Length: 114
Image (cartoon, rainbow, N blue to C red; front, side, top):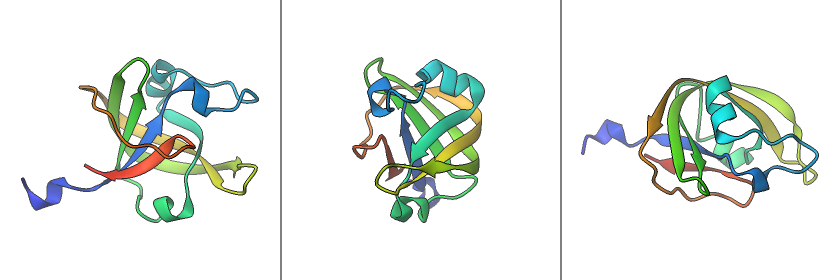
């Protein structure tokens, strides 16, 4: 394996149960079509590991769907009740991918090495 092929990637869960009922939870298809993962909580430590141009993986564990893209920008989108920063994650160059599971934090995101 090429040393450069392993990089940090942001994983976003498209599962409806990870979004509060106060927010309209978009489907996997809507997230992929719009190129925006809305109001995702990302811990400060995870945010330091990722940047513009890194990979983003959008998964729906229930439907066993996966897409991969490139982060275009992060837009601040408020905070959680516990003070964790939320972001609208904008991405481009989306490609459908073969489903494989990824580890997620309880708030529906994580950073993994791909």
